[in-house]
Image 1: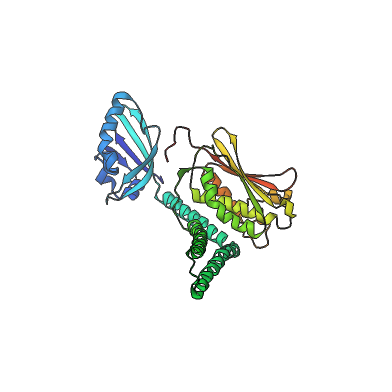
Image 2: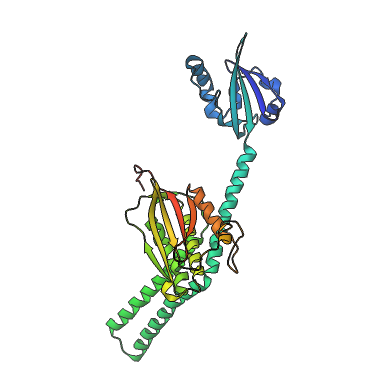
Length: 359
């Protein structure tokens, strides 16, 4: 057998130990036969194993037998590993026997961990790529406050050199310098926060808070293309429990796609609407609606496929990553064609249970 096969008596003493069990645990059959099964268990289970058996014999209440579960097993050298164990029982003329099948989950867990790391790297790379694509808009946004700072400070220097020391005028100019410096600093801070590599961490938040964080970055691109963004987010929405940075990533991607879709639209239609709505009990949606060129039926069928893009310079990973983020939050990302023009993308997420309000 590929799996470890272990037979124990009713009192938990090992009676049979197959070759796979020897390889898995590092014991020979001779070493363990006649020993208590708990030598194969991690400290917590080893401590309570005899108690579990005694309770089962008295009450018949099953914890593992006939059910199976994931446990932490222990090798001869003291190292521990995750294992899936299934236990059955048989009755014979000389009493009851427990038959255990044990599967080492080490490789599976390592593969899952590696997959998780790769997914995190993919998300971080996607955010960096987004910021790279927005470099021109960010440079423009930073240039305005920096130019204002240069102009106001130069005016102060001229007044001082000319002997005009009017404190009120100089104070007003310095206040404007301070305001513009904070404005530039805020752009840099939000860019830095958005691109930082972080571990996934879900916390209670609101749609309004997420939109407020992503709004300055989203408007960089929109304003650079003479597009207005209209926010219609309700104030009384329930909390959601999400990784805020990942949801911001989805919203920013959807908003940038909306901007790209309206490059050739007339000025009166150059508006993106970000709204919120209830879709079902325990769910809410954030909807990004554009008035752009729309999506053909042929493109719609492949829209969320990795590496599919309608952009000249796109990589085709944005929407695929966004849908993955939505699904890992037990939500969804869907789209529909608007009746008049353009497309609406809806990010749907579960709300927190009403009793959980702590922040």
